[in-house]
Image 1 (tube, rainbow, N blue to C red):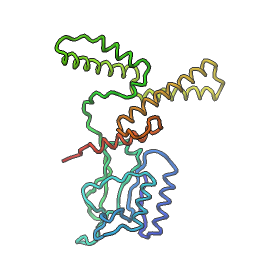
Image 2: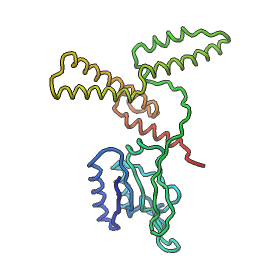
Image 3: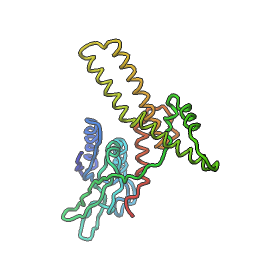
Image 4: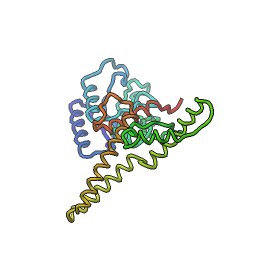
Length: 276
């Protein structure tokens, strides 16, 4: 987490933007940036402001270049006020976070708290867990990539025996097929991400062995088999996230798994009602 207190001078503030970018380049992973930036992004964030200045556009460019998420402010429109009658008000304070932070925490939002003795109102960055509901059955696209899948479906379908009207038989077979597919998927593949990490750990074990001695012929074949299996799991995971993201215009096969995860999480945030 990085705290910011930017100067009021526009030229000096440009140096702060460069410094923040340098700080970000020193590490990777979830990041939160918050504080008093002494600049607004939009004219609507400052009373009696009717145009967007060059410096406001520069601030927005910095946010976009660092791929930061600037969530809406809840509980009010302004974070700073001057005068007993609030002659001047603006939103010069904000909290932003990286996409990795958004993937690590659920329902992230910033909320305006009561202003007591300062010109600035405190802001709280809050997060919570999505309420778990019973998941509905989803046909996973990566199932089609598994060997012998079509033959397995055919064998299961012909093995089901039900009596009654044709529509009842069809509905019963589909229900039985759903159960078969779910059990087969969990027992055979389980959690794709978990299995992928297991493959990576096995590759890491072989790498540690190579640091002290050469791998035997059998160990070399085992390592090659593990790498191939990892690539298969990675491909299946990408297909699964692509299906959840509903971003079908991206070419399947591109290494965009993280992008698909962000899109799926964005759909989840968009469909979530925090309160009425």
